[in-house]
Length: 62
Image 1 (tube, rainbow, N blue to C red):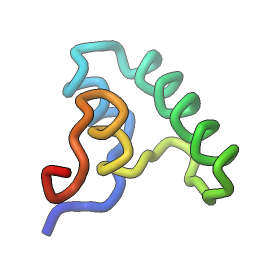
Image 2: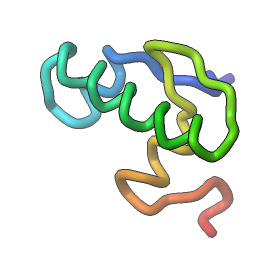
Image 3: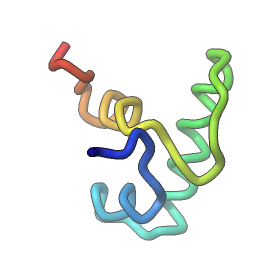
Image 4: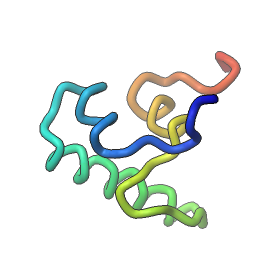
């Protein structure tokens, strides 16, 4: 089963960036979610939201 959230290590690998910069990316995405009223977990980001924001891919191919 695929995890709902991805961590900085996964973001770093996916984007070929440093782990430190991956944390910055996650903080920015989490800040976006917080402004929309969502609760967030520091150091983790929703897998679906990450792929939607970076690749325009939504779950179910929409």
